[in-house]
Amino acid sequence: MLFWSVIIKRMKLILGQGNPDSKYDRTRHNVGFASIDQFAHQYGCTWSEKAKFNAFVAETVVEGEKVLLVKPTTYYNETGLSARKLVDFYNLDPTNDLLVIHDDLSLPFGTIRTRKQGSDAGNNGIKSLNNHLGPNYHRIRIGVWSELRDRMDDAEFVLSRFNKEESEQLDATILPHVVERIEQFCQESLEATSHKAIITT
Figure 1 (cartoon, rainbow, N blue to C red):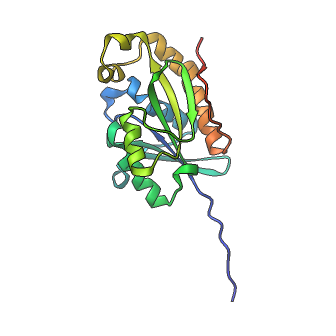
Figure 2: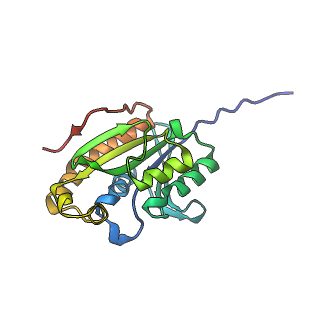
Figure 3: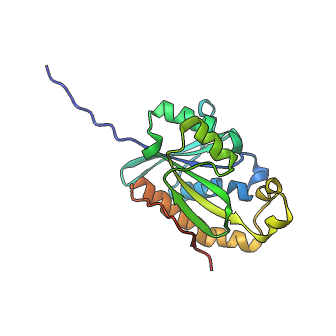
């Protein structure tokens, strides 16, 4: 009797944090969605809604690695529900296979920081993910702080839109850098950064 050995390569799951309604487009809280949309655009991906995952999903391949792009429809604070369904369905290991992209109020606008694990630091979306999956997964934190925050409460601030100058920097500099880091994650070469890397000038 012949026995065939089949090697199944794990896929990478890239999840952007954000709110699904169009009224939230280009808000600070949706910079995770903006990042993953930019990646999908560059790779020619098509989004489709998958109710069983509570998410919009797109697929692509990066250097032979299957990549699943995800925008949860659960709203920001419950994204762990969607992530848990996807991780279970595809039998993924969050520690190695999951990358989450989200805004960070504690980092100045134009800052990108990468982490391999961590606490929620007051971010309710990350709190949901940690509750459902534990804290051990890669993440890209995108700074959204500006002086405007000092004149608004946190909820109002994160749901506000970037101004014209910030939007231009976002498209020209920040999102391309995030796309590079997503590619590094897919190639298993993404390194954690313990310092603030200001990428706008």
